[in-house]
Image 1 (cartoon, helix red, strand yellow):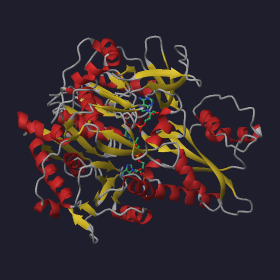
Image 2: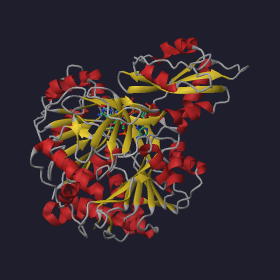
Image 3: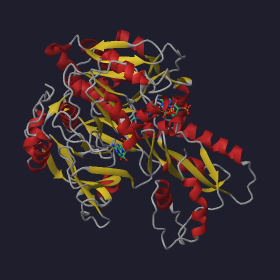
Image 4: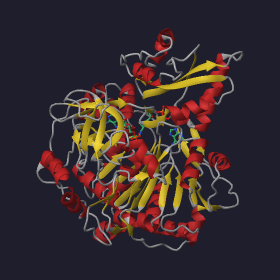
Length: 631
Ligand code: COA
Ligand code: AMP
């Protein structure tokens, strides 16, 4: 049921996935329960838009829940909710199936049909998982929005996805206190043009709220709902949209299908994470991110494992031992988090005394992703835990690892600084600007030869042209990852950082363009640039360089406060935006183009060649100290 481990090790498996993709993926698809099993793996008829398992039909929720109940796993824990702020709870597969079927009934009663969108704005609580799976049950398309986003980001997603129903919780909980969601939702709906047919509100005891007209109480609706059965959909039908930051302010709605996703999730849990039915898997991420979609919710449940839903931080809730106590208490086999979380734990507990005093004997491996794993943090964690520490590289777009060290498949050496080797279906190349393969060891743009494997995005929501122009046009025949790097003589890939305006703050992906648009809207600002500056803890932090309008007389401190507040309101606290520097000018070319790339490369610690077209090199020199690391 969970997919058997591949025979033959990584090299043979990877080769076969590229030379005999049809056979490879049809075989992998046998681990999924289909209403109609696919007879064909890949449909290339609309290339460069590819579809996987075009004649297959299935229901993702059935595979994640009902199937396990009928196979005798009904009483096994499906989800353990571990909260740093209140009581914890468990839901067995049977309980989760019942609740999900009932909530699907709630959505259906509000008119949700196959293909309709449902927007979910919820913290890390079991009801968020129920809401996601209930959509999958009906063949509806969920769009989960991360709780740390502000009203403007939320509004953009509401307008783009045009949801029939919005499901939100009354609050999230952060170390600074309760975060009320309704004011954010109300403001977002004031900014948005689209109107949902209904809203369902889950009332948390920490902040019960008064409901407005058109808002249904979750508990009340559940008490009268009729459970809904699974609706089989085409493998190629969308399962969810997940918005991610691109290089402009407009977020990209990554579309994931049902069939390819179920196959990739199932394959990856067994072969990459070495986890199967009955094992406890913990991805310490948020359901608002792709890691949360793939490895908090879908992969562990599709595989019949137990997943941990953690509401809390790695440090400060209450201390740097939180992760290790959870591993001990729940006998976690595989832990997955972001390098920034390890850096935070290390900073608070450099000797690892919390980990040393916990019983971590259940832990087989630690997987890290979301940003580059610096060799120092790798060495610290590997030494402390005594298990393989596996860096792996992927993106919201791909949905699962492009490169990893597949622990369930092989025992490949780990090289610090590299996320190891390409996963099945990923034909990874490093290209120069003309699209030619660069020599081994030379840096270039990392691209993936089409087609992308099952589980990767099929398009951007409602906009195939945008998908093609964003990812496929730069190097025809390839998907451009937006990351730069190189491959060594053993085929290990090294990812050195983004080549565009996407930055990574504490494992959260943000667009400097989106932040820039908010800064530029301040009446005192003539022009500005937002750059990601290296930060020891969070990897990168955004910093705005601002030029005043002529004649403007405003105190710098006041300006900083106003701009910081505006970004927090519009983009959200998660941007961790605090640095505003007023400068006399921005470096530009003679034709007036701001040299963002040059500034970005300086901030990345590189020594870029300054374009000969620069108007005044002294302007750039004056800014260099501001582009240095923040700590
Ligand atoms: N809802 C509301 N606010 C949120 C939020 C949410 N879901 N998530 C984060 N925020 C807020 C935080 O409260 C904080 O607000 P503040 O400015 O008032 O303090 C701000 O956004 C930044 O949060 P965060 O990024 O969590 O930073 P932090 O300084 O509180 O903690 C780390 C630092 C490193 C411990 C933390 O960033 C972390 O655990 N990162 C791992 C991220 C991760 O798992 N990424 C997913 C990829 S695997
Ligand atoms: P996201 O879409 O939020 O998952 O962010 C994807 C981006 O994070 C990638 O394009 C990389 O820039 C970065 N990233 C993720 N994992 C890694 C990794 N293991 N090593 C280096 N960069 C990574």
